[in-house]
Image 1 (cartoon, rainbow, N blue to C red):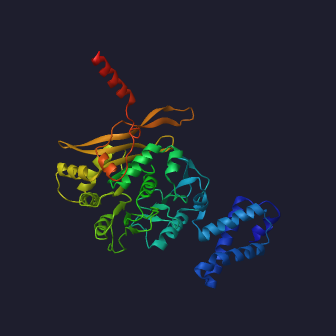
Image 2 (cartoon, rainbow, N blue to C red):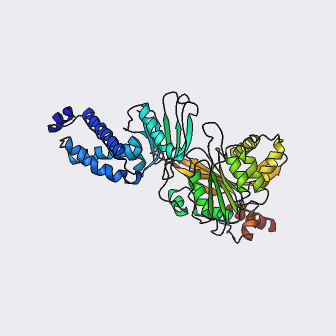
Image 3 (cartoon, rainbow, N blue to C red):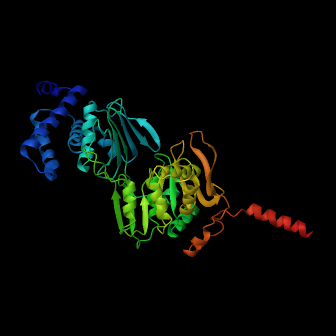
Length: 446
């Protein structure tokens, strides 16, 4: 520490501050190990010892710099290193580490590069291992990808060499600490009040609903909110790759997939969990994301009495969602004719809700579409609500309106049977068309 002590009378350069930080980290780490401090007491011990170590270094840094260094030391030892500050920032919704020197975030739908850096690839690897170790996951050259979650529920994906050519990469979809509700979506302009009333009625009437959307479009957020419409006296089973749903009901069984062990055994897939859930007497089955052969099991469950199910699927439009389900069913390994698959989908799925992240970063439900049955070998879709873009503002914000199409869905009697008598205004009764009909009738009478 002689160079640092010599520099204590003047302003320390960045390299000196880095040396100080790593001196504090290394010294504290050795003391924590040598003292054999219990895990639940380590942070309190480290806080006390950090001051002692700093004072022994005979440094007199400004208080703000000292506090900043202490926080970085604490983040390195007990948090997630350089990205901990980004995870603590409530405005950041996603953190993307593209190697040690390229860290990006998403704020309010906009991607920006940050000044955050790691030492090197090994530093990034240490943070990845800190994330996955408590979950019993592993990552190496033979198994170079991993999905995990942080203690707060944030979703993490990590990729390392040889798959990640330029070094280890981390993508973190942050978990919202505040549970969004319907009024929040209405305030954000994601849905209208009429759409919310309609979706509430559909969930309560036990329709099978697919939430469709691209990556980062807000599917899980919408699924959370729609699941809040489920009655508290129903038994719900949720199935996810990485548990992140925040259901508000008490009677919930949460199931999460399990990757294979080092020997390649012991994997529990979403398909395994869907099959098992049918033996758990569920009133509702909620699948975080359908991405494989479990689509067939889900459709069969929907068609055999397990109505009211909710699931998400990656696709860019309601029609694409149907095509995607067809493809996923084929992944189950059953040699089914396409017409049979489409009949399964048409009889199982009642509604597709399309969620989209627009070019300005805003997230909206851009279509609510009924699966209206089959005509020949084609599945018939009928839009109930549809977003119409009318322009773009000078600051590149998209202007548009979600409008009802005037079509009352074929399943409307089921909504009525469940006690929901939605007015004609919800579906946008076409007043102009009604007036035109009246005019035509008047002309005929003349």
